[in-house]
Each structure stands twice: as structure tokens, then as C-alpha cells.
Length: 272
Image (tube, rainbow, N blue to C red; front, side, top):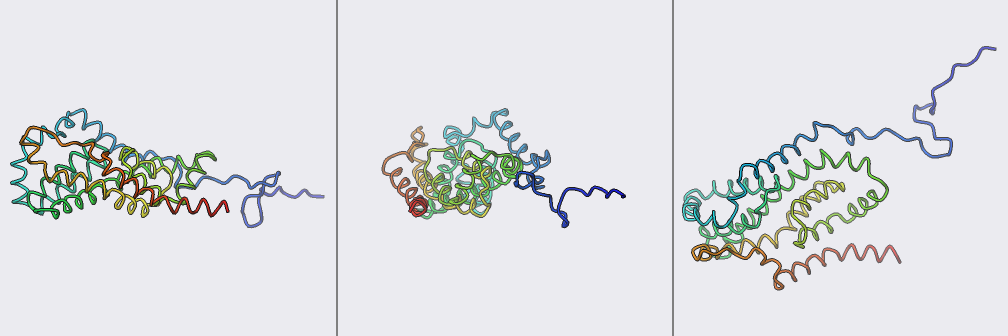
């Protein structure tokens, strides 16, 4: 009796056969989660820029002492080239955030000073804060995309059960958690830019949470810039820790608590 040829393991439709113990046979990792050196290029460029920033000594110029030497000329340039100044400041702030360069608070305060010198009153502070929010959101989004593409997908593909549970919990309430992280000034800005990329937060959620979450703190620092001229002329520097003053920190914590209310409600409802 002729022997039949052995058929490859699997079902007639070509899907993998189940394992002997009843579990599904492991499937290949999704193509998007495979490690690729090409995907690391954007993140590598950002890292190289950060290293070059310190290696060339440019970090020494991000200080109120250096800005005090040139603030008169810079104010005159902004007054004569207002639209160009807005675009340059926004682009420069986006680059600073994308490359995780230090000095965000200094740049925000100085921006408040520059634009308050052109637009009087609270309007100048609002304008400076708006420019910073847009620039910071653009820069943070660039870093988020570079980190998610280069490391986020491969890390999530190889994550263990514990990290997957944390990822699932974060993604379920991504907007609320992101708002809390942005509102409470306890975590470095660059760290909050990276963590959502590793936990699979959707891009739309990340952009919206960043845009609205950084508004209150940005406005505080921009408002400090309104009185920077007198401070620089006196040879002093503004207090960068102003955001930790009780009259400012308590409202920010209150906003963060409001953002957590939906999460707490979901937990209570799930337990019931």
C-alpha cells in the first residue's frame, strides 16, 4: 500500500495548527515591531545634537547673564521684525525641546519679556505663552515620534506581562495620566516626552495632552518675563522656582486632581 506524503502542519486554510497542549502556536512578530537600525536614525540625530550642544559649550549661553548683555538689541530686532521674530522663536523653542536641551524655563521667561516689550499688558504674556506652547508641542511631538519608531515598538514587542499590564492601564487612561504628568512640575519635561512613546500612547492623544497640559505652567513663566527688564537692569535673575510657590503649585495640583477624577471613578465602578 503506497504511503501518503506527509502534509505540513497546519489547517487546510493555511493557518498554523494549535499546539499539543491546546494553546495557540506562536506567531511571528509584527513587521512594525522588528528592530531596525534605520529607525534609530532620527533618535540618533537628536542624541548627537544634544551631545554637540554641550561639547561646543553652547549651554553656557542659556543663562540670564548672557541674555542681559544683548536684551536691548534683541528687543529692537523683535520690534522691527515682529512676524519673523515669532517664527524664529517658535522654531528655536521646538528645536530646544526636540533635542532635549536645557533652558526651557529661561527661554519661556525671556520670550515673555521680548513679546511683552512689543505687545503691552496681558496680551504680550498670552502671546508669548501661545508661541511657547505651539513650539514646545511641535518639538515634543518630534521627539515622541523618533522615540516611538526607534525604540518604542521593539520594546513593546519584547515586553513582559508586567510591562504589558502597565501599558494597557496607561493607554486606557492615557489622556488623564498625560495631563497629570504635564500639569505637575515634578518630572523632567524630556522624560514625560519619552515615556508615552514607550507605552504606546496614540499620537493624537499625546499631542492634545501635551498642548493643553503645558499651558498653565507656560503662562506662569511667561508672566514672569513681563517684569524681566527691571530685574536684568538690577543685575539679578528671576526666580525659576516660582512655580513651586504655594499660590501657584496648589492650583496646578488641583487641576491634576481633576484630571484624575475619571480614572478614580472607573476604578471604583470596576470594583463594584
